[in-house]
Length: 244
Image (cartoon, rainbow, N blue to C red; front, top):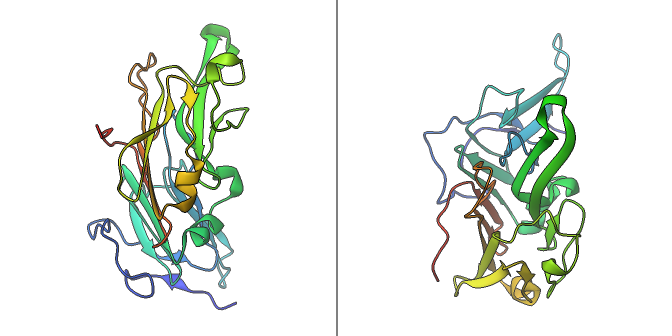
């Protein structure tokens, strides 16, 4: 297959309202590019693009990562391929493709549950015993809320069992569809009936806050924006929770 190198921010995808020309423009192997949007490192959201460079004599094949990776010296970036572009400034990550399904095709299904919050610690720190954790995710494929073990259902009361002990009472998730009113998705440990709204929406905004974080590590993500119609997926580490 002919190898295509992403170089310019033009072409079939057009330009993005979020595009930041001050970010370094990275050459990537467009035939092999993949994205990781759920690499939790240091209890925070991480965004990574990775690919293999083909072997060109006398150089052997090379694996490359950019973004929030210990392998990478490039933490902020932008790139554009004929069918995919991505931009990351350390706070906001944007992925753009021909369709939302196309975006999901560049992401491992194991990364579909995107961590809204994640924190792990040892109960007995000095001997590294008794691993404890708090964490919950929003699945960008089926739009369900998950703990580290269980996937929620609409109408679930998370107070009625131990399945969702990883989701604290203070965790709050709201949503908007097509720029409409703010509605509760998770509030007071109760899941609303919301999937029909998200299923028919052209644009979805998920807002998250955990205001009484006892660990003071901050939320992994505060907003997820999905534009099905125009093929855009955006993640915000920092964003205000709307009042309406």
